[in-house]
Image 1 (spheres, helix red, strand yellow):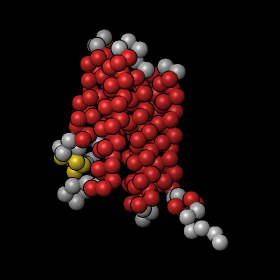
Image 2 (cartoon, one colour; image 1 turned 90 degrees about the vertical axis):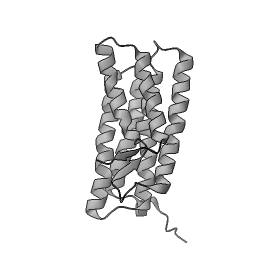
Image 3 (tube, one colour; image 1 turned 120 degrees about the vertical axis):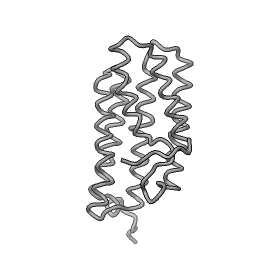
Image 4 (spheres, helix red, strand yellow; image 1 turned 180 degrees about the vertical axis):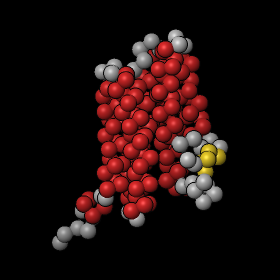
Length: 177
């Protein structure tokens, strides 16, 4: 007897776009490990573009689904939580204890934020997010270049991760774009 749970029954165009987001997250991690800083950041930025598009295309084409919502969040974990954390972890000029603490705190906050979002969704009929969305990490990884260009301490840059972690799990209302 054939199962009705074939993966091909679930995956639609917007889901392929979400998967592209996840793939770019993995590519960013690989680039970070090999210290290809520019490519690591570029992959996260491109993942953000795909993350912006997947839901909009799903709604416009009438293909939004619970499967797509879950897949989007799983891909976001890779691209906007793990990839930025690994990017920061590879900054060898910062004490390893600080880098490990950063990765753990950021990971926990990001996972909690996405789990809450998957249960509660947005506020005020989709006008607001509760807590800072995980794709905000794009701004943090991009700001790395400003810090290095102006010779600012990377420890201050890493503090942005801790601030973002706190804001992700906060109940702050953030206007949706």
